[in-house]
Length: 332
Ligand SMILES: [Mn+2]
Figure (cartoon, protein in one colour):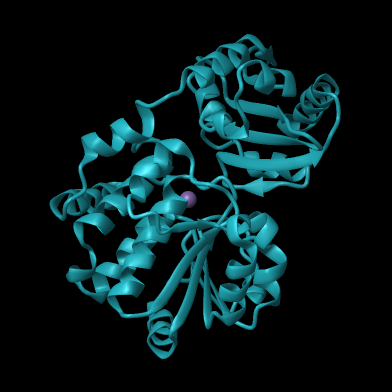
């Protein structure tokens, strides 16, 4: 755990031009962290731009009514310049440059100091000029709260409170995932006091499912196969499914945690067929270190939630392999 804010404060006060980014397909925590940091830096009279690889998912657009979030490829030339001229680049809610996809090369090559603020495992500190990491924290937004509240309560405006609340609510699966603790609730109580609206945030983030996604979910549920007396479940989404329901990979968000609702299931794997690759999502309950299992496929993540991307292969073959590997993994 590295959570010394002194150096962060010093680097912010010494510099003028900032770029903030996060991982592809940003979730509520990624966006909430970005918008909170953006507002803080603006209040500090800095030049600051948020630039992401992916467009903001529809259900999270409410977090950015002022349209402060830019998509890298929508104006590549301008965004490259901003990245080149930045003094500091914040990489939030991920510790891997590769997760910034099309931006990876430009960020790596920029002379800017790179600051990573994150709560995922496996941070290589050598890759950044400063790392603020707390893997016990359920959300990057909660780390940002810790920082901002120390900076001064005035920085937690109603807008910032709502962004951070949304980040914590979504990354904790609405306060039910491991690492949700008393502190999470007292922080959220404070954020509500400062203007976050829990009913509005939940409604916007979750009660907003497009019919296409529901149909995709029904196809996904139909694909389930159970193994080891129902302890492992594997679900699949194919290119044909996406095609049939005019949906895309963003609509798969939340599918993997859905597996964990099933009685007896202890581990779940979702296989999503993309154009050239297969995206694998892993979930587990309790002491099963599913990030160790994800390593078999070159991936990683948290103890109970991890991911990997593999070269395109028939989903049925990959599924067979998952079952075979899980048998070994279970007994190791
Ligand atoms: Mn997060």
